[in-house]
Image (cartoon, rainbow, N blue to C red; front, side):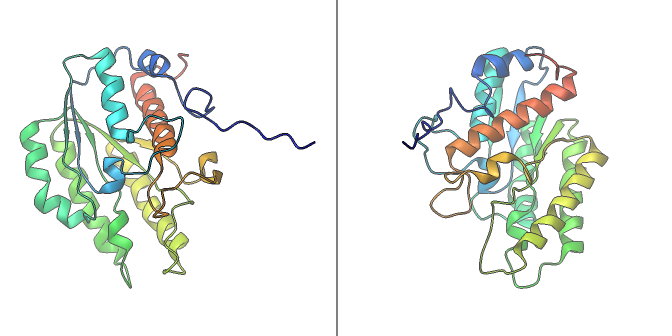
Length: 227
């Protein structure tokens, strides 16, 4: 007899922290103004997964932070399809006016959806974004893209993602950003990880990404060993 494992839910997912555990990791978080700029991946766009709350990673993080900082203000101006130059031109001013002390920066996914990406220009644009973000004094947040994120029309897609991730890792290290590195995370092997468009994480992936961001912020706070 073949035994079929029960489908994961948010409560049983080994890669998800409960809201209580996540809040415990961030119990002394000093941040009260959380901003998100970028594209659909930054915003947490994705299809629902049964057994998981219908929230993107950024909305999840805002909710966790409100558990420990009820006074949290949250601004999300990310736009589907935005490239880094679009973020610089259309979103940065609102973010700066908001004066965040915690800021998510995008990682340039839409910059490589073209015939021949100019990685030198992509790096310059992202560095400009990091410079502006750093001048706010905010703790920066970023993430790399997972290997499950594939655009089949580009046969060199994995190499494009590897190059982009390398740029993001270098900038995150230089600017002290909390980096959730999803490239080789086990969640990439989930059959239901991606939404129907095969690009965005479903809400099960969004839940795991939120947990990874929480863990990185806990590391910034020196709370990594807490349950």
